[in-house]
Amino acid sequence: MRKILWFLLIPAFLCLGNDAQAQLSRKNIKKNNRSIAHYKGRKRGFDPAKKYNALGISLNAMNYYGDIAPLPRKASTDISFTRPAIGFSFTHRFGPFYQLTGAFTYGTLAASDAESADPNGDNAYRYVRNLSFRNRIKELSVVGTFDLFPNQGTYISRVKWTPYAFLGLAVFHHNPQAKGTDGKWVDLQPLGTEGQFANLPSDAANAGIKPYNRIQFAIPFGIGARFRINEVMDISGEFGFRYLFTDYIDDVSRNYVDLTLLSPEARAFSYRSGEINPSTSEAVAAIASKTFTYPNGDIVYAGYGHEYPDNKRGNKNDRDTYTITTIRLTYILGKTFHRAKFR
Image (cartoon, rainbow, N blue to C red; front, top):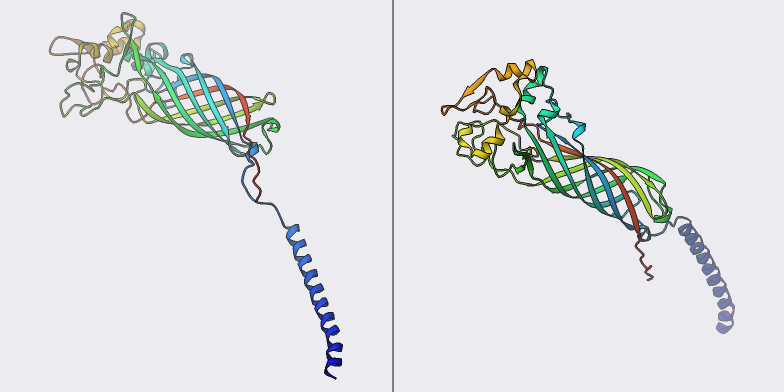
């Protein structure tokens, strides 16, 4: 009797098991379908196959903004003193919006009171000051660039053009020079034209002044636009500022000092008002009519070339700066390929 009962129950259990297994399979299929529908792939960031490097060469224009400017304004410059510069760059593209560029730029900054300042009216005092300089800049910079239009493809299918902004860090070497009466250019930093190497009294306007460093840091920033020429070449134009941490690009920053405390050569380049023609204008003649006489008999124009709190050569509270306008041609070396890894 028991054997007959087992024979009747076993098929029933088998049927129930098959039915449960079928229901479980249907649930797994639905679950897998939902997973497939919502699958977006692994987020690995920017596709490595879309990264590439590029070499560039640029022609630049450099402009100076500082104490030797036509007007006592921060944005004042003399466009006629725009000087050419050349640059070389290496760029690495590492994202749809981003690239990093390292560059070397070599160029000259220059300015002159006698050529830029108006000898008539309120700014005649700049003409009488008669300072001038040139400074050959050697700059190394690294800047990050953010494109407005993303490049989602490889370098071959990159966007036709995009505006961009950039920000970075630079280190540069500068060496302000001035031309002497003999026509030769002289390095100004070793002279200490504002008393950097003189024994100034403790109550002097420039007391405690230190020699400035000819190696300085800067923060480059600006905007530009890049255009695709063909599959491997781009051309870009940009305008960039250099925020500086020095006011001695032009060797001018603080007050005049007692000329008798300077070396003869430092004295000659610290005070140059005596080289102007006093009859240039009525305003210049009025300034030149007032003089200051040193105990040794040397005569300078009042307000120039002698120690007094208000006798300023420059404005130490307004640092110099310079701008670089760039036209750059870049050649793309190609994308960096990475083999896919299968696990």
